[in-house]
Image (cartoon, rainbow, N blue to C red; front, side, top):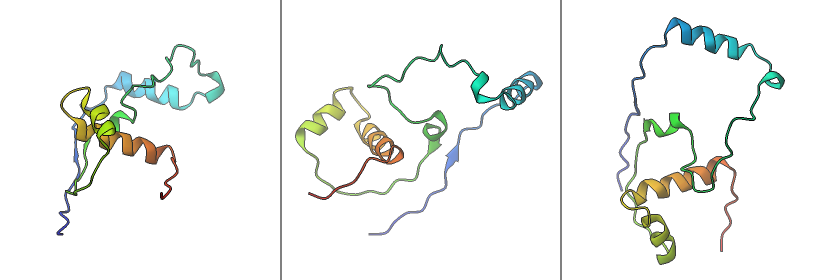
Length: 104
């Protein structure tokens, strides 16, 4: 099978304003123990997970053929179109959270 190598496509974000740069510099110089995290809601168990930056990249893809259990496929499809992207997000979340891989 020929593996296609693709370049990442990054979304072009608008340049920062001077006010945004000053805010970021002030935040960068603030010690962690002085930051109030109390207004940040906890992550929802059904959230998409991942970071916006990762989701803003067009990740290269490789076509594969695999089999998936029917119950897992139904779970991925219950939210409608985009089940393959959800499958990738689940795998990426598991990898980023050091979920162990065991053979059965």
